[in-house]
Image (tube, rainbow, N blue to C red; front, side, top):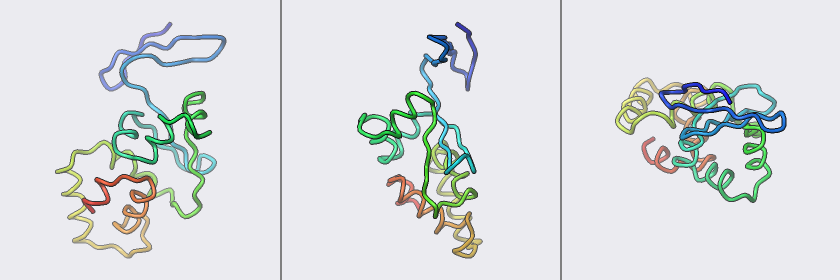
Length: 140
């Protein structure tokens, strides 16, 4: 096995029949938009904590995407309406504290970009609503 550190957590990679698997406290998963147009890597725990969509996918065992995440460490999002520029904000939304997010959202309301802008609050709200990130929807 190989030891390494990720965000302060000591983890081990174990090789089993040519496949690598991660053990430890923190497990990351890559979320890919369509065919890798944009990718975001974040903690599985963050996804499950903040999103009912990802919680159902990763914990229920009923979705092929969850099995794909378990085996390959990747979740593929195939929605055509979701823009890469908006999707790129997913990790930031999941990893920031509520006061920081409120400040960011307040700044976006003040600058109020066009609704078609992929970094507008409307775009972020649509993505958060789709991923069932209720706390974030309420903050926006």
